[in-house]
Image 1 (cartoon, rainbow, N blue to C red):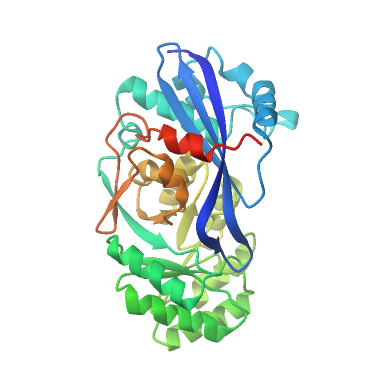
Image 2 (image 1 turned 30 degrees about the vertical axis):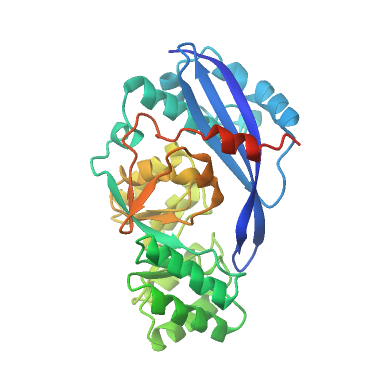
Length: 356
């Protein structure tokens, strides 16, 4: 199998409601969709997302792709390219074919060539993955927040992660109370780096004293404060410290070496996610998988050692799929179709296209 053609699409997705956290607010997503086509006519599809700010025009993106990526991809075998290890140095760092979009399309082609769903190709055996609802609720009213929780409950979710980190402690406490009134399972919070070490300890003790038994707190302090995270792990035995989402492989390694994380949050490329999960397993640290476009991370989650949870936010990108990933009783059901199993809904693709 050789790759001989490609198509790019630029999409604008207006969200059903604003999403965000203690630091940011977004009302739309901009997505780039890449289709790599083999000489046999098989298509592998990859995606990248940009929040808030529009991406470059489709013409500009094509120019960049043909200059930086396509010369390496055209005529290549997708298996060879997906498994290639480069030496990132100097001017080649951050360019070329090593983008999440290209990597996803390559692995989709590989799975289709072999007739295997990706989770099996990656060594997974269980086709169900525990998932939690993620509300992205910081900018929602209490009424809309409760309705969103109720919608997740009706979808079968029992565990949820909500946003905290509001300047007003009572606001955080009120949202925790609402969440617990609706969701009976694990309750997680995400502060998105809103606090100092001292403030994190103070707030989490206040949450505990108010009767909120949290499963984890995510990103309570700035991402590279490894001594601070180690301090939190020792000072807060009643809650797991979840972090690492914003860090590259080197940062994740430093977290683990400093014994500064209880649950390592994975987010990013297939290669880095698998490498980081393998490293976490060496340290006996379980992992979680953050939001992934069209929930494609379900294949990775199903193949990683000790993956506690997959995050699900029910965002509009799922409208693009003919058959989106199915969630049942709080579990994600891994697609059993070859590749990642997501085929594009061409009518929705055309409706959302915005060449710019």
